[in-house]
Image (tube, rainbow, N blue to C red; front, side, top):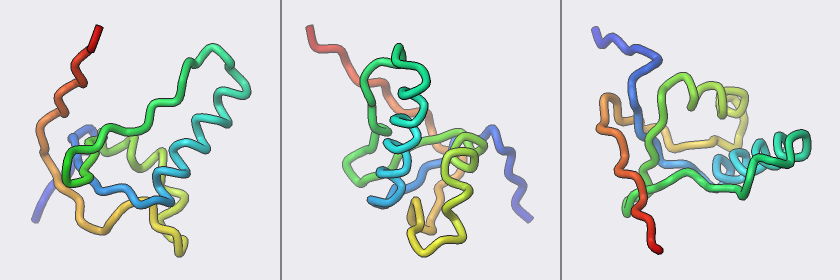
Amino acid sequence: MLEFNINYLIAVRLTDAGRAEHKRQYEELSSINPNMGEYVPPVEDIEGWSVWKGWVLFKTFGHMCSSTHQPFEATIRVGVAPPNPPKRVD
């Protein structure tokens, strides 16, 4: 048996539908709160993996998981290291 804590970091490969939903949710929230700043898409590595806390991924995309437009590919990596933050370029 594998135990999974919803606070674990997990990695998924978002689909175009998942990326579009992430942006749609941002736009919806920014229409209520215009001080949110510019949209920043999820950081993806060279292979397309993005890292999320389990509960954040489920909260963000859970409503899509029974649709024909899946938000991420079926393979999930559990217990991954946190992503390296992007370096500032001044």
